[in-house]
Length: 471
Image (cartoon, rainbow, N blue to C red; front, side, top):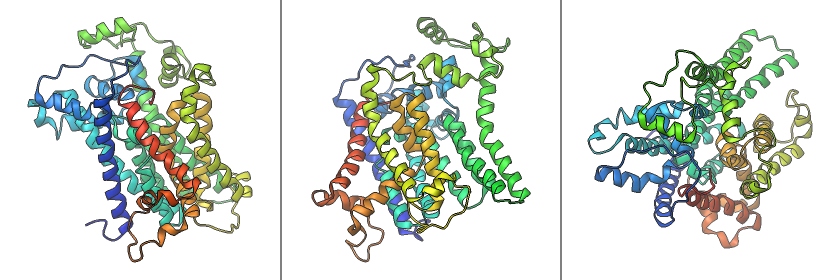
């Protein structure tokens, strides 16, 4: 098989599939045992299940359609009907529609479109998650120059605290896959190929735009170091354009849908028009939104602010304290990862990685090639804490950056150096499972770290599938 040349890859492949199976099983159990909370969330009308297949799909996969998943499934089924749908980028709905009306179309005799979309989401995200875990391993091998650290990091990714979002009808798995492959190709100096994948990341989530920072840094570094490689800089600028393009096109699509006189609501089904009237959702052809008349019409930021109250310090309210507590572990973990890297490489960080410096170690988490990734997660964390809904921060950081998995892998190896020598001659055996099997003998720091991954994997699944606050 294709992975036989690297036993680590084979183990990552198997473990990622096992973790998706466990997540799917947990969401069935929790969705069955715990009553759904009546949350104030988007709840469009659904076609009533009219077959045994629909009822079975809802029983097995119904927990994957909660919170934001309702938006993605709705868009995949009906298109961008309401203004607030424009906050959800199109790549995932396009993929779900393609699967439901393509390979799964023969099932239309036994499954409604929504049921086929749920099946599509489960299949697509399990597939993308597995490839994302493999891509993270490949990226780590290049950026860390350490196969063992990259291997353990990929296994930790399979136990991610944001695991339920990687399986539900969310765009996190698709985004992580496109991001990790794109960054790996950039590390291999395949700029345009890498930017094509990073553009797919932008087409799935808005924070894909932050990946432009990797390219801009290369341009500034070339200028600072006096490089005259115009051909390479030209490819980099072209790559930046490619990464930004999906965002720009989607904003234009939003403008043409809601701001032009030709936009109409004639084709909107009656029940969706009724929902719009009841919930005061804005339809195309209704009164133009205020963002249409701004100098640079940007639907995304305006919709986030109007419908979800997203903005600078807008979420700093006493009633949001439980959400801040839920996000506190990832904030503390990110802060420690950033600070430890800074302590190991103060001059590199102060010079913003623009000057080549001689380091004691060029491999592992503290290697000089990791600087850009640390800078990237720093920007994401600061922006997320100050400007976003804080409960989103866990899935944002763990699907957008490899740093936390690299750092945790680094810490676990430092705390438990025996994990690589326990079973001689079995280089591909799973060190994450070894740690779990040896729980009683682990260092306290290791228990805390692994406990965070496991508790949030389980707790997050239980909360999310029952419309409890894990969004």
